[in-house]
Amino acid sequence: MEPSAVITHKNGRQRKPAASSFANMSARDASASEPEAGEEEEEGLIRGSEEEEEDWRGPAVRPGVHGQLGNVSLLLFLYVLQGIPLGLAGSIPLILQGKSVSYKDQAFFSFVFWPFSLKLLWAPLVDALYCSRFGRRKSWLVPTQYLLGLFMLYLSITVDSLLQSEGGPNILILTAVFFMLAFLAATQDIAVDGWALTMLSRENVGYASTCNSVGQTAGYFLGNVLFLALESPGFCNKYLRATPRDKGIVTLSDFLFFWGVVFLLSTTLVAIFKRENVRGKGKRRVPPPEETQGVLETYRLLFSIIKMPTVFTFCSLLLTAKIGFSAADAVTGLKLVEAGVPKEQLALLAVPMVPLQILLPIVISKYTAGPRPLDVFYKAFPVRLLIGLGFALLVWWTPSVKQDGGFPVYYFIIVLLSYAAHQVALYSMYVACMAFHAKVSDPLIGGTYMTLLNTVTNLGGNWPSTLALWMVDPLTSKACEGTSGQSCGSAEEAGLCVQEGGVCVTTLDGYYVESVVCMLIGLAWWVWLGKKMRRLQDQSPAAWRCRVNQ
Picture (cartoon, rainbow, N blue to C red):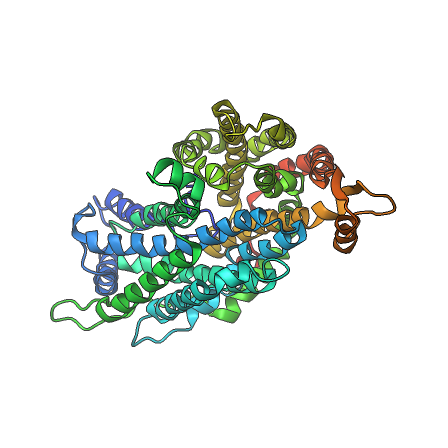
């Protein structure tokens, strides 16, 4: 997805270069015409290492994927499974918004989306600790997916009571359970990413990235867009039923039960029938080569990287760059649902965005492939700030457009165009940032280096979003109308207002306050710190090289 020599994907976990074996092979072919003294011996060692690699990666096949369709299909299926809990977690805030929970509750639930940004903290453990007899990646994949299935079955029994308990949804338990689902999905992602590199042959390992992006996107679509559509009585009655009913075709508990069973059955089949290390005819089983660094060495390396002055400055900028977008990114969708826009209609707007999201990185990479990719980041920054203000205007305009039968078609066209403009600005910054990560990462430790920078980038989006959700309620002003001597400053006061025959009316929505404050903070960041980020491109390559390797 990113225009770099290292293939990465949205959640920030980084893959090894898919074309590294091919590049090495091309280099050998180019110098094979006139071997010098010692090269024949080296060539023999290379051939021997390739034969050993063939044992653990599987027999070399002709270029093309036809000989490994089974492995590619399995990888694709595992990534689809990974996207299911992520999609479900993404649908819960929209469901909660329909139950009028506070934005502080929404902020608390937003911690569910943190594990994919923090998995670098335990990824070295997943890589280093395993049972060799069962398989390096299956040692984590199988128990993780069993736990995912069991958690989904548990939720299928309890989720209705958690969403409809006395006093409102039980946010604490919901957050805890869905946090564990996201944590397990992130751990499964680490295991599948590693297994993909040994499951496929050298010629086909590049398909691992395709399986990841397609599979995870499809899983998220099933768990979010498709679920919200089938769960909505309005959508089902309008498009899928002849006789209207008061419930959708599926419920959340039904959906969780179905996928819980799928997780348990598919994991059992993988555990029994899929061998991680293949045995060639007449050959002993050779385990995959071990990582060159242990767990403690990896953590020491991460610490040494982040202590470097240029990296520390860059990470500090990454952690603060998205404050200006937090209100628009985290709160706008919930405010539209609060204003009466059906949540399933908002989810379905993501469908026409898929082609745009595929094409944007390809187009933008033409402008970020040069020596100064952060120039694109800097130019897109104020555009994204203005789009955030446009979102605030869209939310303000929405109640006046609402009709008895819902919203007119032109309203959804405007929402779609606004979202498309936002995606252009977002992807311009995203692709530029990933290109710079690839440019500055020390090639000797490129994997760890890139993963660290991607993790910091993701964290820079998570914490402002949580804070923005948390601050909506404190910044909102309400007044009690219909009775005197009452106020609506707290839940208790609002209850007294209603008991006295009054009604709480919002006089100033905290979302609009946040939108203006975030834009001002973002503008200040762009004027002062944005230039500092651009100047980092002028640093010499030595300034980014880890001192451990000097």
